[in-house]
Image 1 (cartoon, rainbow, N blue to C red):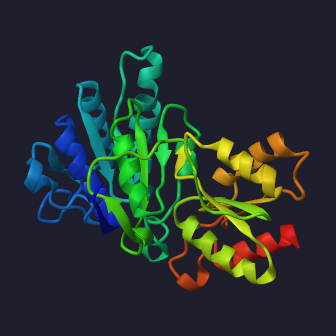
Image 2: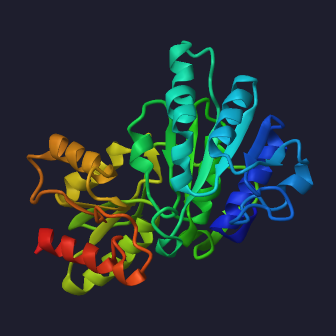
Length: 325
């Protein structure tokens, strides 16, 4: 299969082109997604030119309406994509997505699927407290919705194509800090990355670092730094947060007997809370130390980079050393 080096943004755009060529029931709704803008982060660049504005439609600034229209389209036999510009604005869609779309297939005994893909972007600290929140735990807590967050271009395209074929609603989360900073070879043709299957991106014997999204690059940097003190960390990229691949996590932690969970969401009641709890419940007799967590502090996201509350390489290194040394 031919490959091209792409940014994550380009890989997502390629995924949309592949999916919409393959399925004329896929339609895309969102603010500024049609040409000439092609989306604020350019992930929908060229779609309206190629597929027309009946299938790629820019909307008013009304996230609840975008989600409601997507629900109606899904019930009418389409596979809508609802682009919500920033994750923070997804709060305006919660009733439509979590209280309705996520429950339709369950309540109808499988007769009424809701194949909606909602895409959104997490900002960095300079976007401010209302444009940079990581709210994935809210959606992971609700049965009936897939939640994915890629860390690299090849998974960005593959996970998008998988979400677009799911009978259940999917939340596809991309991070603005990764969209143009990560490049890699991506197949030009249609392929999928399975939900519920984590990837081991670095092998190690002393501790397992479980992470996703921006945490992957951070954890790999920390793992390299830790080699200087003789610590070999294994790094697992979850990729899919719901369903979550506990099998791969348990297998790794059973070998290393130590674990740290790293994510940009707040540490208090973040995804690491459930992951840590599951590891303790299933492997408590094997662990050499309690599971550690490195997440954002329990504050709004500060604008100043000097005050950032997000995980850092130093914080990950320090936590690993606390558990291993």
